[in-house]
Length: 103
Image (cartoon, rainbow, N blue to C red; front, side, top):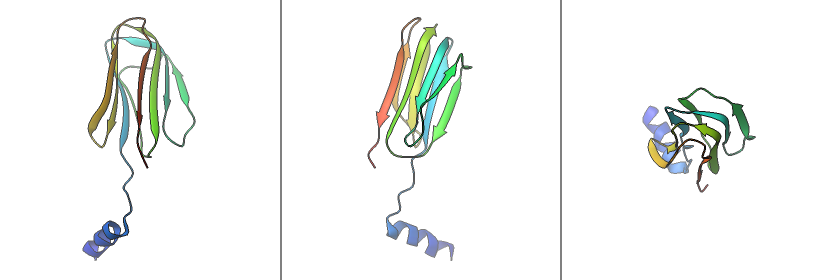
């Protein structure tokens, strides 16, 4: 029965939603962190703890923006276990990570 269900899903062409992870790492801090997952409202956090991570599962554009960076921080976008974007910022620089996925 289990094999039939797996085959039915594969044959029907149902796509598995992507596993999307937004991650911030480093020895620094940030005054403001803003992130967006497809189909959701943009969210802003003030003085978030680092390391920081959130996940989602929907095709489209994802973004992560850090403002007021103090020290060194790196933002990463990881999709299905594969890092697709990584940007590092030094003290004072804004940091932007974005990635667009097709449907």
